[in-house]
Amino acid sequence: MIDSVRGCKKYFNYILFSSKSKLKSEVASSYLNALWLVLNPLFYMLTYMFIVEVVFKRAEPNFPIFVFIGITFWDYFSRLISCSVNVIRDNRNIVTKTYIPKYVLLMVKSFVLLFKMFISIFIIFILLAIFRIKISFNVLLLLPIIVVMYIFTFGCGMILMHFGVYVNDLNDIVRILLRFIFYFSGIFYSITNSLPPIAGNILLKANPIAFFINEARNVLMYHQGLSFYLLIWLIIGLIICKIGLQLIKRNENTYIKVLR
Amino acid sequence: MKILKVKNVSLSYKTIEKNDFKALFSLKKVTTFQALKNISFSLEKGEVLGIIGQNGSGKSTLLKTIANVFSPNEGTIEIANNLKVGLLSLGTGFDNKLTGYENIYLSGMLYGYNKAYIDSKLSQIIEFSELEDFIYKPVSTYSSGMYSKLSFSIAVFLEVDILLIDEVLSVGDIHFKEKSYNKITELIKKEDKTVIVVSHSTSMIEELCSRVIWLHDGKVKMQGETTEVIKQYTKFMKNLKK
Image (cartoon, rainbow over all chains, first blue to last red; front, side):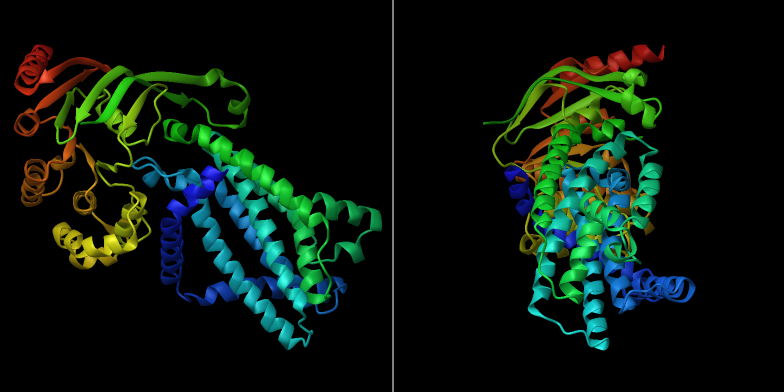
């Protein structure tokens, strides 16, 4: 693991430059350019507002912010997970021609998504101001939540990246799983208020994404502190990262022998 | 000084017949193909080594193994400390969606150079590649000739310590072919570069290389002084045609 951190330093210039260029090319190739980074989560927010507030009439107070926080975290998680399966295949051009530690490729993706997430978080702060929700120092606690989520997601991504090389239909499996997790993560409803207490409690402990979103809302909207469980997810995340790194290190130079 | 030692390297490809979820649990459908068998040689600093052989004899695989793209199943490859090994083949690891300009930086950074160093080489690379305005367009818009022009320029000007050349001189128009051939001979003769050349052109190997390895079915059939090996190789190829 320490080895990989050192490797990270060596390839850090590459990771930064590559993710910056990727963002730039993504922005340049679409019609509305950078505006999409803002419009995309906003339209999702409007959709959920319509469904939950108008159709079901069960919205939480300050629902737009509530839902926007959920979307922000979910987008990061689901996008990294679903693209991690194909990372090696998508980069076959690079992988078959030069040596590159394979986790670097995933890290480039994660940096691109992280940047998009920070734009979303910036919008959250604008929404907080519009809805006149007091911003307290608790907001700073958002940072450890993001760090733990990053580590956890990255670890899962590495493991999926490894198996994605060998198993073609992993893509479909991951897509179905993600859709399943989506409805159990409390993105447009409050797990604590809408579910029976026992079920809610179990969900918040067993589903890390539901947990991260709930923590972020607590910190941003309700001025609460962090839960002790964040530490546990940090440890689990680090263990998954270690497993993923080992898996990749042992196999990375055989990946292209399998790719066709 | 020996800067590259290849010891008893064997490598096999695994191909999985059906890449589905079941294949994960039953490894029955895996077929292996032995591409390199027990290959050993070493390389002195400043030496130019040629590799010849028929199609499918394992030449490109050997180069890729030295460049650490593959890892050998058996045997070791030792490279003297911290030397940069550059594999020059059609399209050095480009990210197709990004511009040629950005790819110059990315390729350089993969070799371990910092931005300032690449900055200092940038104008030379762009000029030699003759891409002009295309350098600011995504690589996916390039023709195959432009692709190899850019990859050639990058590998040559970024000054890797061991240059691996894989048939790259057989592409591009006559003018660029000549220009790149001259550049390579200049590198070999003036700058004392260590080079491994893979080529089907025996005349080119004869002119550039001091020593040749002849690969056949993944094994070293013969290695030694250029004229001798080439003589045997041409004889062998002629017999094949009959």
